[in-house]
Image 1 (cartoon, rainbow, N blue to C red):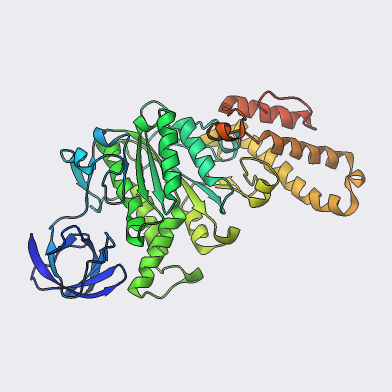
Image 2 (spheres, rainbow, N blue to C red):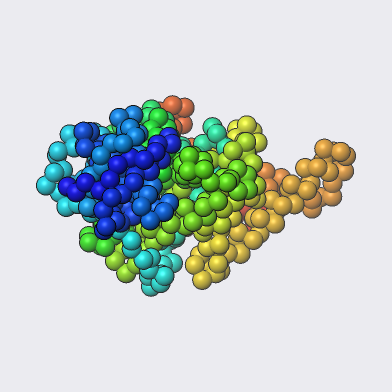
Length: 447
């Protein structure tokens, strides 16, 4: 390895290296300390022509001013190939559940190799992926190759809903599932690993974890690391990928911490000025092409339950569909706690879901909107003062809300309620029957 210079300054995870060679290492090159080769520094830019600004990926305290730095002359390499399926990796592509040297003979790829996204959708980009979850398949149907967000505050069921989706669609033929934990608890990663193992889903799943106890550098790169691995399977193995991220907000948060260390002036809401480009860079890596589709499901934490938070707004704008989980709905005992009016999808079009489905969504939204208006009136004058038509619509909305409640397979061991799976066809029939009944008195077998 080539000696390229010495450490000039250290600020948290940001390390400036004074280069002394004519041919400067490229951005994203991995550097090492002379005495401690386990310490990894990644070049993220040049503050001037001789100062390489680096991330201390290992977070090691062994770095010190004046330390001699070597260049690996390559970027961050991770193992890929069929042998990684069923295993758990950290942000640097090192195995967590088995010895890392298990993959020493694997194919390796560079995480940060620039790959231009394919701007063209595949010809079958309107393929709908059935989840078996009534409210999702109706209001925000999954379309292969698109991006779906599950937005909610702490403790309203984002992880449970994400895990249920993995349970219901992760075993579809020829699918490969990725789960990426960003800034989440170690306990949750352990529980998910065991759940997938018990359900025999681990054999078609790859997990990457950058957990909340790890430094901001590792949390910021676990998403791109997993995305690079998924693109290998899409392009070389021609696999369709289901890519779950829990939690994309923590990706923004990690980059914000790094931005503060660099000394950048914060933008709106206290976030980093590069928030849009940070998100866009990751989202563009999760694209689809003629080899296969990468369908992403991203849970999004809402700070203080504020949907207008700049990071939440920015993330939402880059998604095709948004499932909003409400604390008020959760506290009312309705599960999954989906806010039926705030939840929306740009994929609800006649071309994608068909005319019947499109029309039913319009009718349901209209009834629910009226229900919200009537609740305020009833609180003042009482239900008995409403017209018969308004009372019928009010009770119909209540029937619809009750219909969309559903027991989850992943919680049946906790609450004893058996999980439900409802096909898209049966779901539409039941909703149409409710709407056509006027008052919702017609019984359905789906509840």
